[in-house]
Length: 200
Image (cartoon, rainbow, N blue to C red; front, side, top):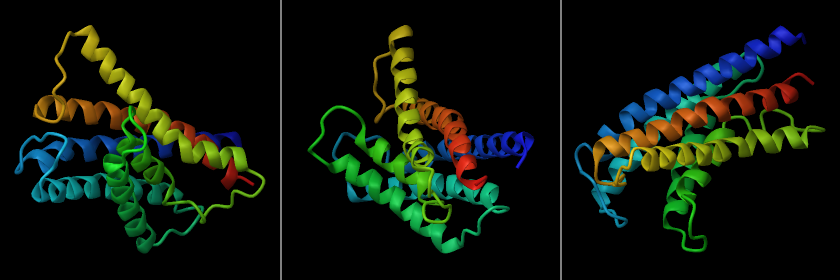
């Protein structure tokens, strides 16, 4: 296929995914914290449920955007979207509650690994494109880490006392920054990698 096909695909993929992350995280804080309020590390059952609903909204928007862009190239059923969203939520909580790795936000890293790839893995052939497949799978968590670095650079630059889980403005700013950075950087990187597999 031609170069303009590649450019069009990457542009549509990046735009659709970024807009989905933006809308999802505009709704995330009001949904996850709006009724149940802020929280410490330990969450109540109602807070977990509220966060699951908020995560499901983000997951549904992002995976639906991926499905729309991939529709001319591969058929992805509604069942795959449900599995991807469920996997995203499960991976997020595994990362949140795991105790083996201390330091990075494993909930985001694991959740975004699933969110970036569960829609298309097994539906697009990665044969002879192992590197492209690895990039397409791992670029979302890498991009989310870059988003977190942007957040913490802002915290230092503006001398803000972090209170992300209690302050709704900080919570929303954090997730919007991480989400949109992931949409832009992760969307572009995964779009380029996916096109290599599609255009085989």
